[in-house]
Length: 223
Length: 254
Image 1 (cartoon, one colour):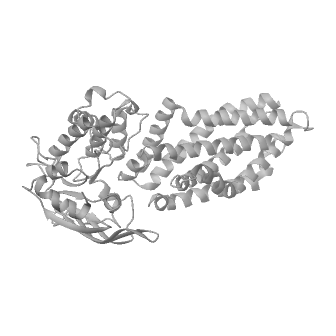
Image 2 (tube, each protein chain N blue to C red):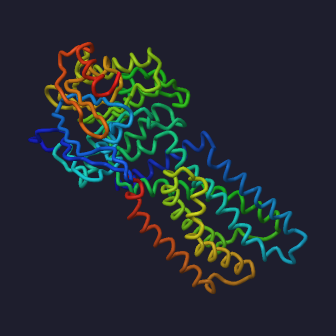
Image 3 (cartoon, rainbow over the protein chains, first blue to last red):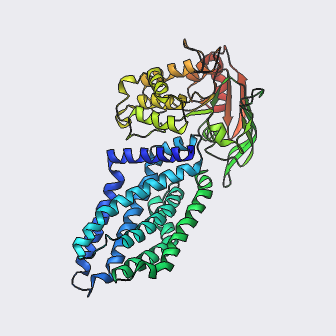
C-alpha cells in the first residue's frame, strides 16, 4: 500500500510542477503538431490513399514527441539536484520508477488526446475507435515503460539528449512495428480479433519490460 | 536502530574507485552518537565521495559502512530513514512552493501529522512568511535554509552536510552557520531532536567545509582527508582557529 502511495505522490508532484511550467507538455505537443503538419504537406498530393501513411505519421509523431518528454522528465530532476532528494528517501526505488513512468504515460496520453482529433481533421480518417485507442494505449505504455528506464540511464551521461533515442529506438522496434501494423490494419477495416498476434506481442513486450524495469531500476540509479 | 551500537557511523577500509582513479583508499572512520565531526581537505580529497557513500547515493568499491549498527550494503532503505542530507545543491523542486516541497518529502518519509511538522520546520528556518512562494523565487540563502528544513523534516538521527554554505553571500552564510551551530548543540537551542523522548537526544553530524572558523565552531572532532586517505584526525574541542591553522596548512595547504 505504501508503495502505491509513494507512486501517487511522485505522479502528483510531477503533474503539479508540469501544470505550472508546461515544460514537458509544450515541447512534446508543439513537436507532434509540427510533425503532423509537415507530413500532411509532404504526402498530401503524392500518396494515393492517406491510409497508407497515417499509421506511420501517428506513431512517428507520438514516439519522437514522447522522446522529448522522456528526456525532460529526468533532466529536470537531475539539473535541480532533486533526483538525489528522491533517492535519499527511504522508499523502494521501484516506486520511483513507477511514479516517473506513469507520469510520462499521462503526459504522452494527453498529447495523444489532442493530437488524434487533429490527425483526423488533417487526413480525414477516423482514429477515435475502441480498437485504435487500445492499440495506441498499449504501444504508448510500452514506450513509457522502456523509455523511462532508458532516460534514467541516459540522464547521467554527458550526451544524454542524443543517447536516449540511440538507446531507445532499437529496443522499441517491436512496439513500433506492431503499433503501425495494427493501426494500418484497423484503418483498412480489419477486426481487432484478426490482429490478436500483434496485440499479444505488444502486451508481452509491455509486461516483460515492466518486470525488467522493476527489477533493475535500483541498480540503474546507483553510482 | 540498534541501541547498543557503539559508533553511530562505522566506516571500515572503505575504498571507492572510478575506473583507475581512486577517490577513497582504505578509509577507517568512527563517529560516536551525538558527535559532530568536521571533514576538511583539498578539492578532490574524497570528501564528497565519502558523504555520497554514507548517504547511500554511491556504492563503495570495497569496505563496509555501518550506520546505527546496520550494514549500509544490505539495509540502505532502512538507514535512509535515519539520515538527513544537505549538500550545495538544495535537492528541491523549484516549481513547487516551500510548503509543497516539504509536503512531498513528508509523504516520502511517511510522516504522521505532516502539517504540524512542516509548519514547525518552516518556523525553525525562518521561512514561514514565504511558505506559499515558489522555490524558484528564493535566494540562495533561503534555498539552503529550506534544504535544511527538508533534511530535518523526519527528525533524522544523523545529519550529513556537504559544504552547505557554498555560493552563499557572507550574510546568508552567517545566518546558515548560526542554524548549523544550533543543530550541532553549540547554540542556545541545543541539539535536541523532536519527539526523542525525555531528555533530548543529540544528533550525529558530519560536515564538510572549507572554513576553519565555521568548522571548528561546530566540531567535536575533525578529520583531514588528502588524496583519499585520512591524513589527520583529532579532538578539537577548545581548540582555536589560530591553533588549528598550522595543522590545516600542513595537510591541506595554505
